Image (cartoon, rainbow, N blue to C red; front, side):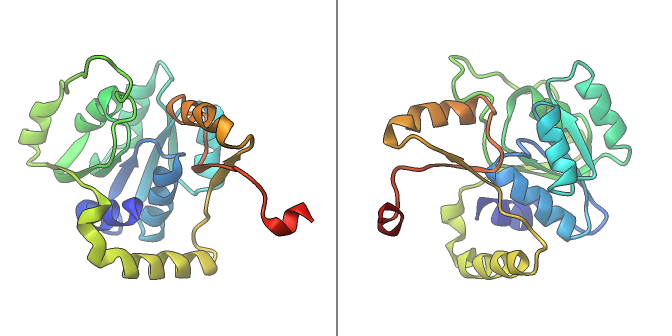
Length: 210
C-alpha cells in the first residue's frame, strides 16, 4: 500500500519520467520499481551489493541498478540521470537521499517513505543539498498510509489485477526459526540482507503437521 500511494499520490509519475528508488530491493522499493516501469518511467534503483543490483535489473526490470556501496556511487548516479530526476521514492534518507537531491529536475517530487539508514544512529545527519530543493522548486513530502484509507480498495484491486496478469512480481523473503528468530530477522532488514518483504515463519499450518 505504501508503494502505491507514495508513488501515485505523491510522486505522480508520468510516462518518460526518471524515477529513482532507494532501498529498491526491499519490500516497498521492489514494488515501486515495478509500478514505475509499468507506467512507462525510466527507473533507477539503488540497492546494496552486486547481487541485489542484478536482482533489480533481471527480476524487477529496473533500467539501471546502482550499488550505493560503490566508491563511484555519486558519479554513477550522475551518469544514470542525464535528464535529472523527476520523482524520488526514498526509503533510506541520509547520504543517499542527499546525493539524489543534487540531481533533481525542476518541480521534482520526493516521496519520503522511510529513513532506514538513520534509524539506529545516535545522531541524525542533515542534508547538505537542501538548497537544490529550493532552486529546482521541488517538493519533499512525507506520508503514512493511514492518510490514504480511501485509496485502499482501488490500490488492492489494481495490484491484484497486475499481479494476476503477470505484470508485477511479489518478492517474499521467508526467515525460518519461529518467534525466536524475529530479532535476527529484524537485524537482517537493518543490515540490508533481505530482498522484498521479509516474513518470519512462526509455525506450520495444521495440515502441514499431519
